[in-house]
Image (tube, rainbow, N blue to C red; front, side):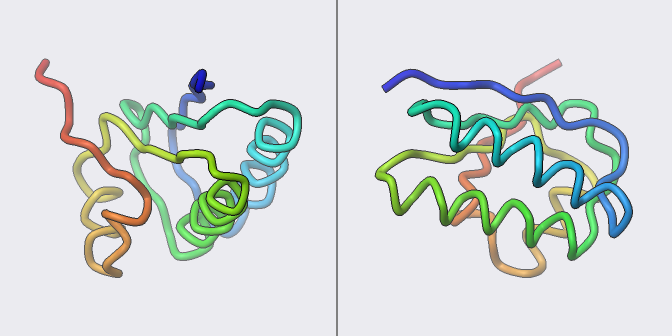
Length: 97
């Protein structure tokens, strides 16, 4: 299956999470591709942002599609690991610089 890549950057929080969800829903509903989020420039994610990612992952899973996060590090990675969602959200190791 093909992959659709989408970059995440800056901060995903209570203010920006709804906009991100809208964009990801367009990708999820408009293609049959797997979804790969490039988190190279992601600086922060809160519980609202994580909830968006969980919902999108669930939607794709029900359609037999994959969801993966690449290049996730620092505070955003730790936030997702703390709540125990690293495996579910398909976090792969950060690529070497």
